[in-house]
Length: 271
Image (cartoon, rainbow, N blue to C red; front, side, top):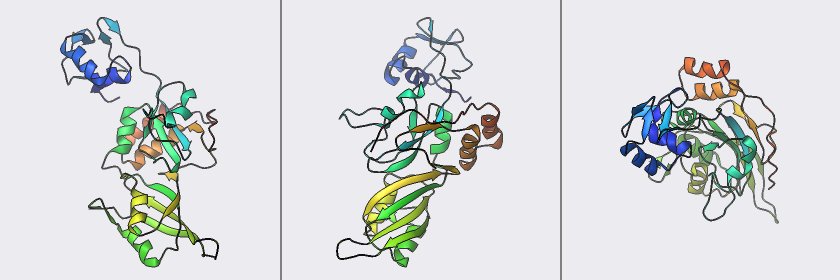
């Protein structure tokens, strides 16, 4: 397990906020294996004994890796001061605090990974990690070959051109006197910029009416019911790490030591 800054460990354990944890360290209240620490020191909370004012902090919970079928209308955060529905509401029965890896905006749905393993999350989110993410996108328009090519080659959004993507037309409904045209696209991204697909389509005058993430790497949403979750099995975790170009030996330990059990979570949220 990689070492982590001690103030982050204390914050993750709920001992104190990051800032308060830093104050405790500066006051000499924190020790690792009996030795006082200074700001910036790191520790492995699964091997080292960390105490605050002489009391040992709780051991870390068992590592969890899961997928959630996020419904539309939920924001990808653990709490919201405005009272909006959060994905944390859907995973309360996991048994420990888990947080999302990346985001799906409020109006999007589909596969969302969640974990309490910071090293795994960092590997998936690192700028050099180009794990492919597959989306099913419905737009209210017919898509021309030129627009499709632009999606594939990259589009300048927020002043920066997107990386090349894969894009294909799945189906098209021609316009009628009562309804406008609708096209279903499959788009695979290799980066994770904020609201990227919506902005790419907006730049091409393709109004998005539905956006669903259906796979990350080789891990597919499959038949997981809306609003429910299930643990990832060790092979799925390893495949994600390999897609993120993590060292083979590190990824392999998730097969050897993993405890993925399968099965659905009990969350019953509806649309």
